[in-house]
Amino acid sequence: MKPPLHLILLQPEIAPNTGNIGRMCAITGCVLHLVHPLGFKIDDAKLRRAGMDYWHQLDVRHHADWEAFLASPGRPERLWLFSTRATQGFWDVRYEEGDGLVFGSESSGAPEPVHAFVGGARSVKIPHFNELTRSLNLSTACGIATYEALRQVKHGA
Image 1: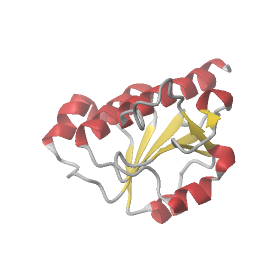
Image 2: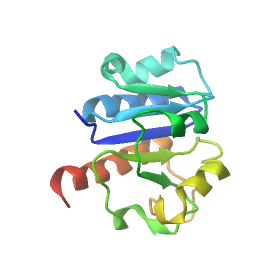
Image 3: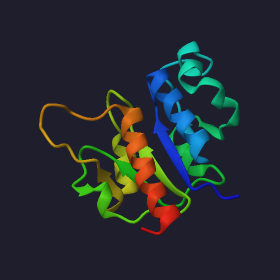
Image 4: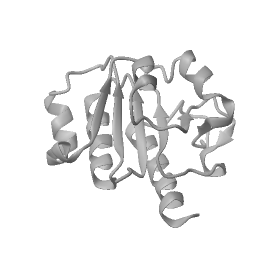
């Protein structure tokens, strides 16, 4: 069965964020790709606690780096990079089944090679309604993005 979406986390640093995202992926049937290096050990107790007992139900794939992800079999063909630098809103694009949603690390976002590969046409942002903060928490941003993409995929919106 084809997964509805793939979530790609680039060098995530905070175990509870990754655990929350893993839990969401297990519930929604999405594949989670972790692009190393990680800022925590995969057996970290905080990761297990955030992911709770869902981690064993999760299709999680590890990649040594961005190039290894790109070379991996079964990776999504269409990628959408979520970035605060994008000008296009995430509501303004059409997601398709099997798309990949790419998120940078908590402290530094996506590296330049990822921006260059995905390109501006596939870079999107979640709007800010004030200028008080730089960005949303990673797990919050992944949840918002995933459920909008799933809404479109599942309901043809």
